Each structure stands twice: as C-alpha cells, then as structure tokens.
Image 1 (cartoon, one colour):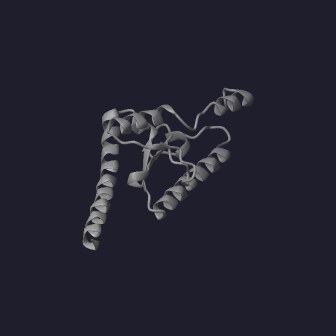
Image 2 (tube, helix red, strand yellow):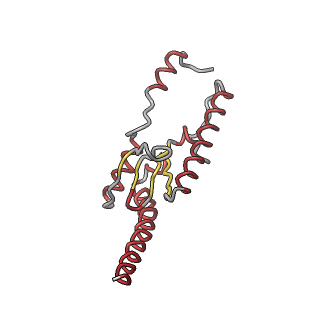
Image 3 (cartoon, one colour):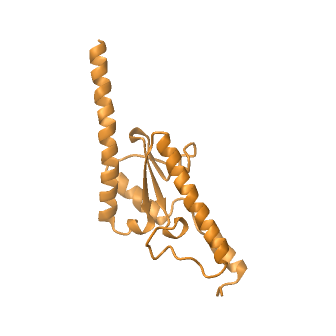
Length: 155
C-alpha cells in the first residue's frame, strides 16, 4: 500500500527532472575539467544524448538508476504498488535505451552510459570519461593524420 495519496504521488512524479539533473551536472563538470567541450541534448540525434562530443563522434547518456534499471544497483527497486504498470514501463525504458544506442552506433557514433550512482565518486567518474573520450580522441587524431597524408600524396 502506498503511503501517499494518488494526487500527491502524481505531483511528486511530475517534479522529476529529465534535463540538468545533479548527476548530469557532475558529468558535465568532470568533462569540462578534462578540457572537453560538448553540446547538450542534441535533438537531431536519436535519444537526444545528454552530452555530445561532435568532433569525437561520441555521446554520453547520464541514466538514472531507478528509471533506466541499473543492474545490481539498490536504487533500481520496483515500487510495491501497481507492479504490472511499473514493470511494463521499465521494460519499455530499457528497450528504448537499447534501440537508441544501437541506432547511434549504426550512425557511426560511440556511446557511453554513465549511471547516476557512478557520478558519486568524482575520481571514478573522471577516469571513466578519460578512458572513453581519450579513445575517441585517438581515433579522431588518426583520421586527421591520414587526411593530411592523403593531401600530401595528392600534391
């Protein structure tokens, strides 16, 4: 039994933000501190990724553990009331997330998902971003070098 009235629950759920959340702000701050520049919530890309590093053809999604069902995370509990509704909703969210990641990868984008609970420790967050964005930077640089070489051969 829910200890909150349906009206109050509806109001509470309406207050849940989808953009500019605290975890997203921590990821932005870490990426910026590493020297990377990015665009936010690019609607022309599937899933409207939270951070888009266009030069690196890389995107980052910051997922809430509860809404996106982070495996083996305590925050991904299921409410005890209306279980069928919640299970269906969570299944749709997970399926949509997988579809969006697949569509982006097919379009040549590299995708990283950072979970809400992973943003708590800034050292781990910075390391994850460094590894993900650094590997994209190497690929981007490799493309630049080969383009330069091609221009030299043509001239």
